[in-house]
View (cartoon, rainbow, N blue to C red):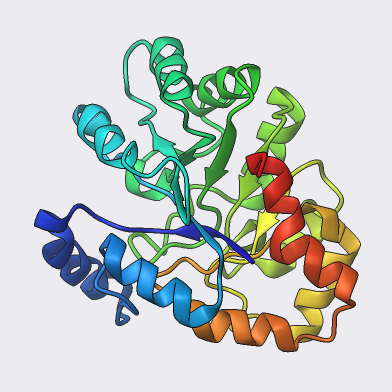
Length: 261
C-alpha cells in the first residue's frame, strides 16, 4: 500500500510547526511530525511507502526545504520537492528539482496565497509537465482561510483545459468540503484525485460514486498524515465495499505507476 500524501518537518522546527498547525486546523496531529513518527505510523498501518509533500510558503525557503526533502528520495518514505509561485527562474528551479531525483512537486495555493488558475501556477505546471514531474496541489477548503478557497474545482478545470498537465493530482478528492462541485465539474477529467483527509469524512455512498464515475485508475490512496491517522484510514479503506481490483488500483497500482516503482 502507498500513501500518496503525508507531511513531516525538520527535527528542529517540528514541535513548533505542529503546535501552530494544530491551532490553525483545530485538530490534534497523529504523529510528532518527524520522520521517525511517520515511520512508526506507517508500520502500524501496514503501509509500504509514504510520499512526503513539502510546502514552500515563501520563495526564500526553496533551498532549505528542498535540501531537507532530498534526504528522502527512495525507500519507505519518498519526498517530493517544493516550489513557490513567486520564485524567480521557475524553469531552472524545476530543472534543478528534476536533477535531484524528485518525482514531483507540491503546491499549496492557500499557504502560498495565490489562486490556482493564476498564470504563475500555469507556468509552473506547464514546465513541470514538460519535465515529467508529478504535480500535487491542495484543493478545496483549508482551515487557514476557509472564506477564500484558492483552488476550487472550477479553477482546477481551467488549469486542466488550458495547460493540459500530464500528471496533476488534486488532493482531498478534488476539493476538500466541495464534493458536490467536484461531481459536477471534475468527474472524468484527465486528473488524479487523492483521498487525503476526506476518506472517513465524506459520505461513503458519495465517495464510491465519485471514484467509480471518475475512474478508479485515477484515484490514489492518501491520508494527509499527521492530520489524519494512517492506521484508521488504511483500515477503513480496506473495509470499503470495493472489488479487489479497485482496491489494488487505488491502494498501490496507480501510485506505483506514477512513481515508477
